[in-house]
Image (cartoon, rainbow, N blue to C red; front, side):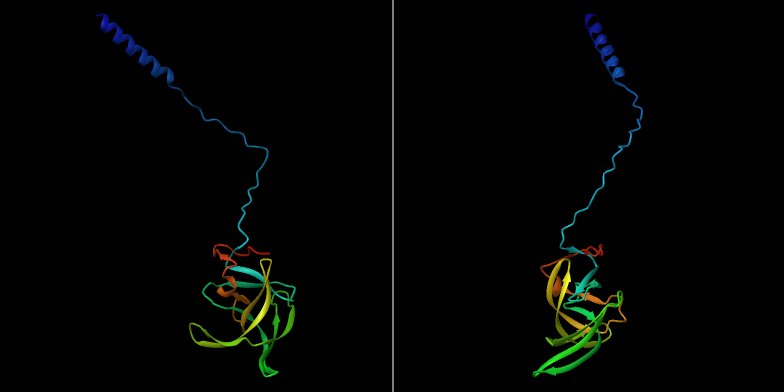
Length: 178
């Protein structure tokens, strides 16, 4: 009987413990902070998007370019392209007109080489020249093919030879550069 009373007492204590630990938790409204925190996403400066501005020096207004990792060489829209010879070398003269600002500049450059561009429908022959550009704060002397790109959405196309070792392309972004 003594054993029964001890077990009964223990059960009553356990029952009391379980009942005393039960609590009803009511939801509380958490007041909003008076200060709003602005979260700024910091990206490395070498990550660029699918569409970016760049400058053809010495021009002052930006051109908009499609960043194309599938293209080897960069390309720019030109007008009045004329081939000529100077001191026994092949040269070209051409005008670049910014379609946004209407700024224009006349260039005369030696031909680096003639290239064949493979397109879906046909092959196209273009001349390649060296141009000084500024993109993402970097001044770069690089090769551009000259094309009449007036049928294209963007006046410029930036290819792998310019991007390699300088930029990482995230196609989910655009206009990351100033």
